[in-house]
Image 1 (cartoon, helix red, strand yellow):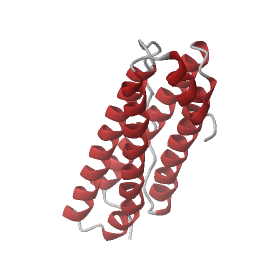
Image 2: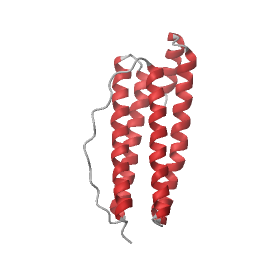
Image 3: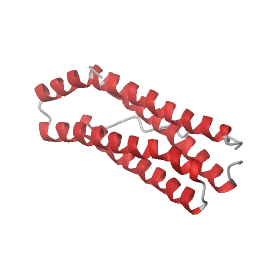
Image 4: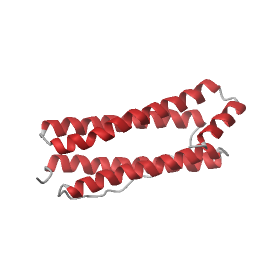
Length: 162
């Protein structure tokens, strides 16, 4: 059965959100490179790739259900932050926003009785729990470090091992 128009539109919006996330995280990686925090840059590069893969999962799912993928322009991402704490505070807020978008899609799938899409979204719902957990953990480490250069170095080194 072909996917409904409302769900198709919602998935297209989510594809855009995932690619936008990828672009934002790549911008954050570039900022970390410039700030001489290569471990954080590495972590963000991995995150950017993961978000791109999420967008492609939605893309392929929509195609498999007979829907039409419609790509829209991705806005220029932010490129400056005060410090690593501010970057990860934004990462956490961004992941919470993505969680909200996915939860709204799940609600729509239930309303539309689109059980296949609702089932597919379970993976993303679980993934968002993990994304928020990691973002919270890193943000808290930076926040609690009080800007200590040694603590920042240690966190950077840890994130480089991802």
